[in-house]
Length: 504
Image (cartoon, rainbow, N blue to C red; front, side, top):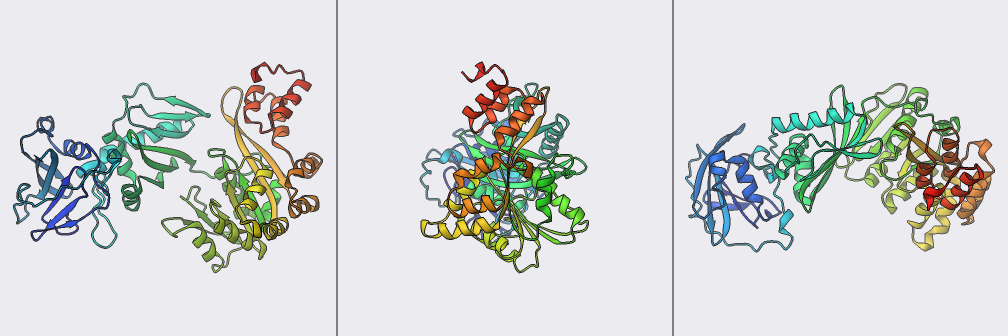
């Protein structure tokens, strides 16, 4: 309303928001307000004595103030539909709710989770379109203090993730386990909306209102960065925050083998770091980039969503681009990277056919490319890449993979005895035998090559896990859960005289 120099803002259940300007109403948002959402917004704005009476049959008027000024809200029910008109106190037009000619729009079938641009936190957080695609975003300072406090507790307790859900207290993931902060009251929808909106960039406020989920990075000085995902589900708004340590871990601290480190000194080729969500792929990639930054004199381009570890130039020049902020997509950024004089390119996620195709071509034409996939083994990674392509292109892609693929690091995090987690990494390094099997479409035979090539630095996940059990770092039952070939792993445990009753 303010950025458009409008006289008033009109809100109605089941309808999009409108502004009133010069006696004419203009649409302001694309998504309609969901069932009960307007009442929640009004209760956030209203004084306590008025809040209890909102939603009744009688018209109500109250004032509200924030950083933008003082406003008057008039609320009434029209044929059962709750409507509100908000205007600035010094507005020249005294616009009445009853005076506006409104046609009632049917409610959407799934109206329970409809949203308005930034309206999820009422007038405390405003994201009004101004005709130029920009927005005015007013954050709630108290809500920001509260979310910062929770994130600090997450770091202090050495947790990896913070979950905010309606009807639950804040939940921390510590060493792989979810732990409710039972000393805290369950969170309400407006509380979560306020906390999320207080730290959300304006672009993401608009995206959240449009599609009901968004990703961004948030940083607390001298503490850590956080990768945030905000969403709406059946109960309302929710959020998950992943800790990204302020300091980039080194390959030495992560016990990354010398053979894997050697991949960082290649002049061209494709290196894939894979694993399920939350397996530490970003941490491993961050350490590999740090190693190159310390030892090579090259131009490194990273394409991420969002940027996680921030790298300061050492010997390398590092360009970090965020999808949605600095570029439209992974594929467009990767295509543009070829014109930006790169030596090394990191693709945060190889999500689609075109991104994978460009990454392969980039690796083939004299660049070193690092990428990630959500696969769990080296063989499934190769199959996933090839299967992305149409059948008539797969033979050509197998040849490209055979020539370009230099290594696959597939990792998972395993709980340690006594607390904490350790990375278990399956490592495939390309040699003539591996390249031939990929070219001939016999990737299923690669595990036998890996088994006989341990001296070259290759190792299967089962062997990594049994080593961790032998060293007394991981319980046999935990290692069994993480094993991909469970039958073979049980045989290894029994061969060592270990009780496998936990397997049933």
